[in-house]
Amino acid sequence: MPVTVREARPDELDAVGSLTLAAYAADGEITPGHPYAATLLDAAARARAATLLVAVDDDGTLLGTVTYVRPGTPFAEVGGPGEAEVRMLAVSPAARGAGVGRRLSDACVERARAEGLAAVALSSGEGMAAAHRLYGRMGFGRTPERDWSPRDGIRLLAFRLSLA
Image (cartoon, rainbow, N blue to C red; front, side):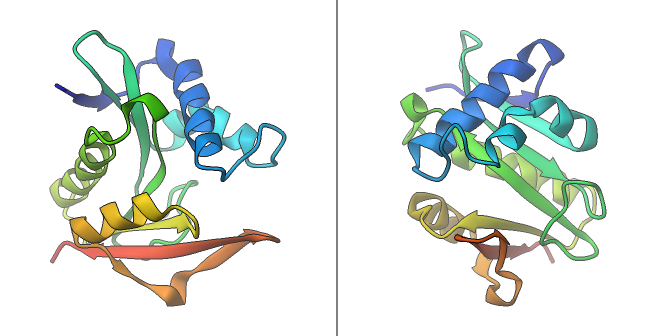
């Protein structure tokens, strides 16, 4: 399936937010009433404070999204100085298994390299086994010293890819 990764357009932001929430819900990570649901839906905030990327097919159908975060900006969580972050990677349940998550993740790594950053960091829910396999295949290593919990009952595992 041909996939294009590009920055999200303003007219796509509502759909990007809906896709993000739907992907997290499909993974069993989030329910519609979950406190994080509003953050996932708010693609406009991500587009203002970071780089919001989308993956689309030849017909323009939205397949997935990811937020590329520069160091020290509002959406940065686990990255250190000189480290970009990958946030809110989400692939439509209908597009899973087609390499969309890899394409979006690669786009973030390419941006970080082009910007001369030292590494890319991210955190991921404990139960996101498919995402963890993807990160491992890409060369990300676990950084357990950066694991954290944004709220009770949620543990996020941290990963890092050195670009040096």
